[in-house]
Length: 298
Image (cartoon, rainbow, N blue to C red; front, top):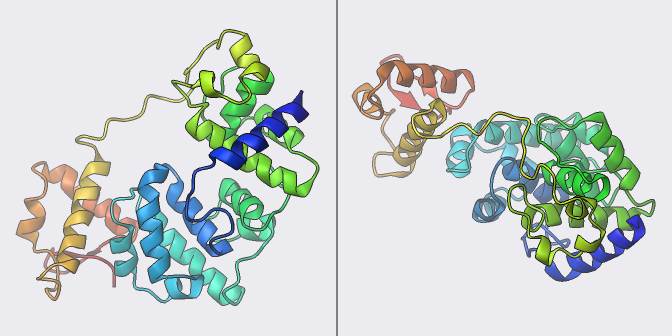
């Protein structure tokens, strides 16, 4: 059965894979890593224009390593979770300095780089270098759990059972393992989605244990419901960074910083605003000047 699943998914991937600019050998391994970092917790459709401009500006690790933090944070724009931008630059500096601007091609060395976790290391090892390694993200876990076990994957951290399943399901052939990782992930992203899977167009619906069982527990999650965005610290932090980006790229870009009165006008709850400014400063995303004005890091 698993062999049939693999064949059908490979055929489906060949025809239906989204034409993303970092796929099909059209970018460097570094470009693949950038795409994976940008795609964390961010919709792929939002990532494409940012990735394209980012790679045009900084085509390799050495170029990004030489940029200023202000340039990097500004270019990150509204992708969200901007600390990722600085961690990506830390990674670029490590690659440029330790590996002569050549991204390492094995999982363990990739994992040692700043800001690179298990998923990113395995994804880059598989997608950029064609290594046989199980890639485990939310989409892959969901598809494998549904199709092979007949149960819903409820989110949260990957369990030992899910990791063992991913390793066991990985084809022994190296080239087939890469296609498998890509096709299972793609199916989870566009067909076998969390809440409303499109089982009617799924290429492996007839082999899916979850569908055969009546889709028990569809959409159940073990994690807490997603936090609303309006009024959260995340929103306030974004507002502050957006104001600093606009100032840096606007007509008053030569000014020393965003004055304190303009900072206080950004959000009416000044206690929350001050806490968010402090957290941005702690994360290295802003500088607080002696007069209380704010700038992006130099």
